[in-house]
Amino acid sequence: MAHQIALIPGDGIGPEVSRAVQRILKAAGLEIVWHELDAGAAAIEQYGTQLPEHVVETISRLKVALKGPLTTPIGTGFSSANVALRKKLDLYACLRPVANLPGIKTRFDNVNLVVVRENTEGLYSGIEHEVVPGVVESLKVSSRRACTRISKFAFDYALRHNRRRITVLHKANIMKMTDGLFLDCAREIARDYPDIEYREMIVDAGCMRLVQEPERFDMLLCENLYGDIVSDLTAGLVGGLGVVPGANIGDSVAVFEAVHGSAPDIAGQGLANPTAMLLSACMMLDYLGETEAAGRVRTALSVLLDSPQTRTRDLGGSANTETFTAAMEAQLRSGVTSK
Image (cartoon, helix red, strand yellow):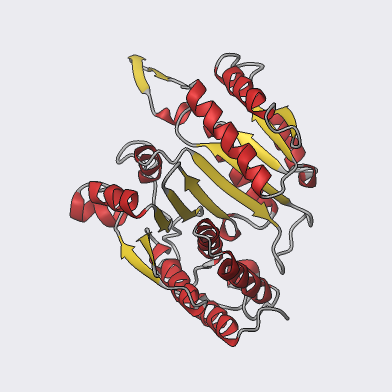
């Protein structure tokens, strides 16, 4: 039976990498009916909003979506469609696996960690107002419910994926009530998982350690703002946002996404690297129970990344979007997924 999946191609290079991933998954033998939806800049002209209600309704009904990058306005203007989508679908867990890939040379060789970020509260609650002219205030919101469920999500993930250590990054030395609550909830959940080592680290010290010895970390559990910053920082350890996947997951709905920007400066030129969105699609396949197909796609990708001829130019290769995609299709259809 074919999987019914919502697809938001996104802005800028989003449609190009989305089409590439669709072709690659088809070459892997997957039967997918795609329900294409516009959001972000592509939706503003037609619907007057970045996130039309029918987009939310469709994803809610189908339960699974794959999303390309959406342009997020800075400062005034439209609010973030990414944040709105997480809130409306209650996608409370942001999941970012970060690991070294073949052929991508970085300062570190043994990075293999997972960032789990609470997605719905903290300073990203968006509760801001002007107290008096020239003075604005932003409220950081933390609830026991949200802190508990993200902690349980992290420990359950660790158990299912043989992760042995969770480090909570916090600033409870300063924000004693909000971050203190986050720690209280994480400690409470940790007691139910005695086989998983539990640690705590102040976020600024944690960031320093991450760029010194990233191999010391296994899983990182963070509130919203810290998780946003740390997940991008860790991506930089393995080659940048163009080579790491991401997912936003709730109790019944999951949205898998390329976490890099829309790169409007190269849109339409056939230069975009589909790797991040392809790896996000592999996470989606795992979620759907298609682990064998996900494994074949990841193996084929490893073969291509190990050769300059099939790496895209941003990774020091000579391939463009089309040659990369065609090479992935050929690799998968040949049935040869190793060198």
